[in-house]
Length: 489
Image (cartoon, rainbow, N blue to C red):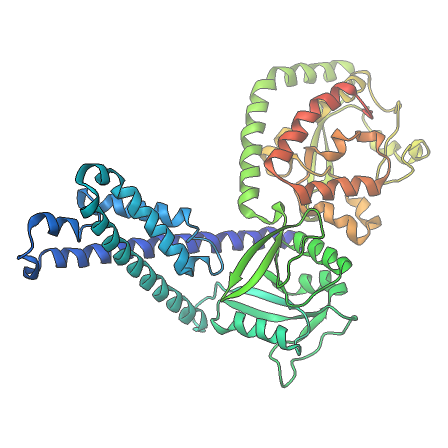
């Protein structure tokens, strides 16, 4: 499910991008239609009795052929939020506000050059004409999309929606009917918030089956392709927490008919679909745009970092070769995002064959948990290796893993694949993001934190709270944590 999450997030981003591009094309077409109609009016013989000043003041959409007005129209609609999802792009209020701003931007200079009277006439005619044109073209676009989605030959971009609630409840029925009426959201089934139920088949009075219960949501999401989960009825705090953890792992959006703000890391934001009001409950990790920004920052910082520290990497490599027999680098299989394995690079800090001695030294593990294997004064560590570990310099080659997209600068720490056998369900949440060179665990004490549940809590907290500022905060705290050398062994 976590491996499919990136594809689900990408589909959400592609839908958002397609919406904006279609609306931009539609608004340009609306402007050209208004400009064409204006040209017809200007050349009409019916206006010949009017003097030249009045003819210029009433119909034009701007100077230099009106292209300033076209650019201002896009800017005004963007500021007014007329490109947002849900019903915002259909909102007459947002469209009208955007046009008011656009025309004002173009005519501000004319107000001081030509006087207030002709500019007011120009302002009113331009606002009325452009607003009507944009609203009509967007309404046509809405109808065309709805018709295309209903056509079997058309590969539907409709979001696949799973509903949480009782399909026989009148309020839940109303939500489903409104979502399905225009065909832009495809309902795939229901999840019951009540006692666990077995999946059933659609009854005579409903078109979708009950896929399972909220307690079985992980399994339901795993076996059903879903883009969005809509809560049509109230759920308790435990069910809400389970819902959020599941949709975060699956990369799925969560909409609720009621406001939920009882979980600290949830960010509720209002959204409407076909006049139905919802609260979108999300976390930063559910935003594909945010992931692209994070990836861009990783590439820039890792690339510059490798460039600047290349002399240091060379010196460390020479020291390792002079100190002990064996390779400079040590590659080890670790588990990354979605349980995918990759070879994590480190400078070799132990003697050759140290992995084979791990079982013999298990009794020295200070954490008492095989998933956190830490031994102070490990006898397998070389002299140079002890120095590298003391200052965390052995981690520097992981910048190559960052460049390859296997790791991030900041994220949960990667663990061994063998540890997954001892994971409980909530532990897998830490695999919902790319593993990092540093993270909340590292800046909170590193090896001094010997409780695996605390490690998981810190990793999941990072995923839920993610922001660029949090990444920068952790990066800035990493250097003091290294200098303190707390838990560095």
